Amino acid sequence: MAVRILADSACDLPESVIEKNRLKVFPIPVILGDEVYEDNVTIKSTKMFDDMKAGKVFKTSQISRGEFQNYFTDLCKEDLDSEYIYICFSSGLTKIFESATMALKDIKEEYPEFKLTIIDTKCASMGYGLAVLKGLELADANLSIQELISEIEEFSSKVRHVFTVDDLTYLYRGGRLSKTSYYVGNMLNVKPILHLDNTDGKLYPYRKTRGTRKMLHEIIDIMKKEGNITKNHKIGISHGNDIEKLNMIKEMIFNEFEEVEIVESMMGCAVGAHTGPGALAIFF
Image (cartoon, rainbow, N blue to C red; front, side, top):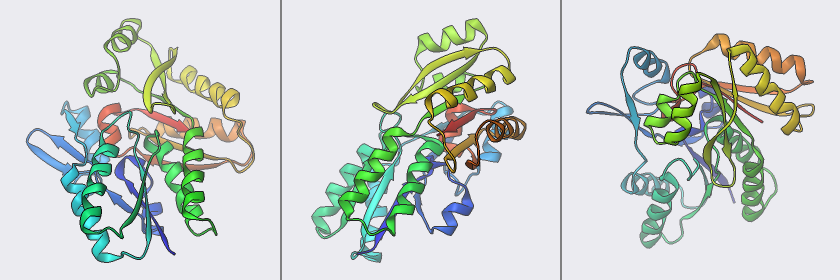
């Protein structure tokens, strides 16, 4: 039986990867004033980051239960024979997993033969994207659906997320950072390094540094101590339209680790609206 992998736009995978794998990606709503856009469909992150630098404030919304009902109904009409696995954005940062789960229950009443499993990765951005890539790689393997689900869940639980932002305001305003962490970080005028906890899928402060180069060296230090990075290890990098910082960390990674593979992309709007221009995230 064919297995089809589904994702949402918070996976931040490059467009080339999405197209090559014909990956179905549910767009997350992005809001500017009274306008609602679809992430990477009716608005691109390059445009959003430019607007943010000019002072515009973007917000995001969850994909609603009704929208998921429509997406799932389309899949039922298109192909009821396949098994589907929706590898989903962290429930610690959004209610998308909850909306999708409720919508699946609704759709099952009309299409009881619809075979869909929703996995809460507890991952975000390219860390989530690496889990989607793992699912795509395993989908053609000779695994049972339960084995495939277990492999994806196991992989997701081990993906390390380390990132930094130029301005904590975006994370705080979007409810992704506590008031205490926000005020302490701003008072000390530091370059914060944050991480995502794989047990609850939420963001927490991790280390504090001063200056971009020192911050990048701190990230490399974390990778060396916590990553168990070996030859051919896949490393994800996403950034807030900061090519200079991207190139700096790539050079440092290639100098430090032997023959690793880097998957890179600009953060999509769903993630970038909360991290802001200049953000940098490493996943390993």
